[in-house]
Amino acid sequence: MLTYRVLVTGKFDRPDEETRARLLAELDKDGFPQLKFTEEGSLAYSEHLGSFSFRCVVLAKPGSGADQDAKDQAELMAMERLDSLGYPYRDVTSAPTCMDTIKINRKR
Image 1 (cartoon, rainbow, N blue to C red):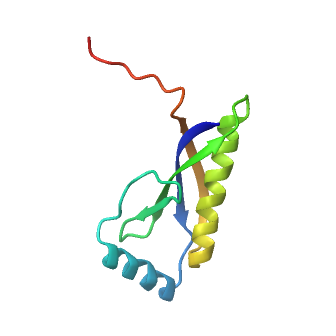
Image 2: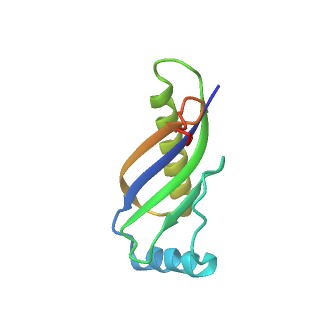
């Protein structure tokens, strides 16, 4: 299995006043969000409530469709998290990075 870090981004879709209050309360409670790639995923947004990011780690089978599988898994995780919290969203996109094939240039 290949390990991917996936950055999912999107926009909040006109949350009502109650939802805005819950979003802001969560932000106040947690302070600055942890911007980490984790298996369960981490949701981050600012007090402007315009856009959000969701960072997660997923596993995908090697092959020509691995990048797409990683994107699909991560987007589904993000949408499930937002749905469970009752946060409306739109324009979800993602960018996967395979940690097993990434090349690190070291200084000589």
